[in-house]
Length: 326
Image 1 (spheres, rainbow, N blue to C red):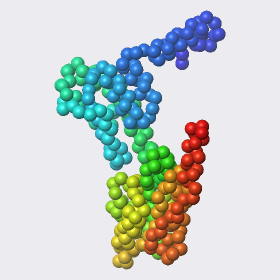
Image 2: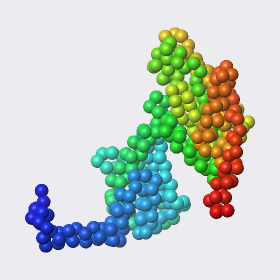
Image 3: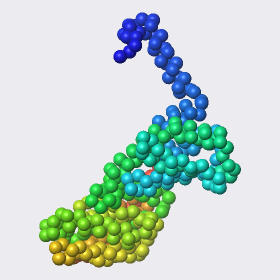
Image 4: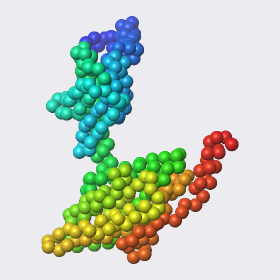
């Protein structure tokens, strides 16, 4: 309850004064240029861990010069590493802990040793920032969970759609080649019907691992449907992509699961397509999906290439002209 209800309920001078005091307090908070107040204000503007570290580094550099800052953590089983700047052979390092929970390790580097007074300021700034860092770590864990398939542990359809959209946009902007492979397990329903969904889930997990082993570290694998996987492969051409698609299928055929003494095996069909300049993510996916459908129609356990896109280059050029006002 307010300590002075009259000042908050009566529309008189006391009420006006109370509101004016609150307004001055708010303006003081917004205008105060003390580094701790400024850091506190800015750390509440985003839940993104990368952006928070950039803000912290910028504010820290205004009072304690340094050459490089690194942040390392493991969130939801996945490593997180953020690097800002370079160089420096002397360092301070801090384990970020709050209420018994660990929220990563921060290291600050430069060419000369840090004075005790500088370390004190760094620790005080971390004390100001730690709650925002904790919230960002928790936000990142929730975000990762929403983008992860619960059966296989790899990114899900939502993550795939986001990534495909980004790659299509980058390809249209810079002309970089990127390939998409869609891989579908053959007759997978019969596996679930005959051996049960537990065996089916084991096959799906083994398939995800097999695909990751058959692709490069720069490629990303997604489960985008019941037994369908999508693989995005940057900087690759038709021939190389066909080889990768076949290598994926061969890796899947080597999966063997024992179900009550009976071996369970599967095969897979694949379609692949290289994005054409000016092509949308939806158009790219549709062409590749048609290639997968063709592989299914041709008897399964094979790879088919998507047909070339139609008129995408013309559409891209016309769009550029309109943007330039030509």
